[in-house]
Length: 211
Image 1: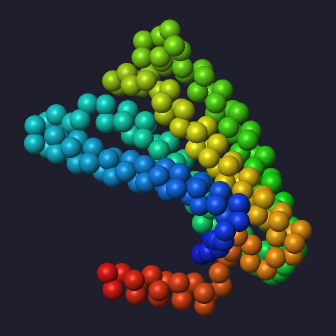
Image 2 (image 1 turned 60 degrees about the horizontal axis):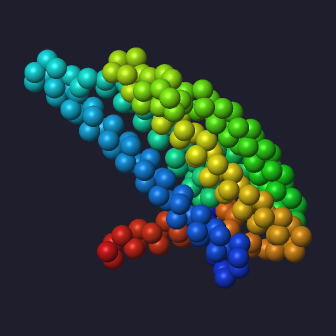
């Protein structure tokens, strides 16, 4: 399951890189959220046009297809940083110390290997759609209104590359924790227990009330 996690910070080079990458990840997550909001507006325009003037938005399905990579991929590195991806904690929740960090390190290394393969494959898929000599640099386009598909295909290797950077930092963080026997390493998500989750949520709600 996905759990709540905290990411500690200090003045180390690893933590500085973590915070620098976090700014990029938050920007990509914001773009993903704006894409969702834009699709909502497009739906209102399309349905309103259909009901009011019998003229729905042209290419509505095409624009949805173009926005899907924004919604699906742009926020994955940020979620990885926050420890929000779905995972099974039945075994890992019982581990402590070096055993925990070793298990996390192996897991992240496996994910990193998979993501590097996906970067390679998605980049090759983008190149098949991109042609500098073609109109709009595109070898293929959407069916309805002919939107070039290469921009949306480019988003996958870009997002996966950012995720690879995040995974690389976490390999560093977990490896450092394993070698040094750290209790609370920086730049990696530390899964909170139920009491810590409740305290964090109460603090967040208190901050909203004070605002």
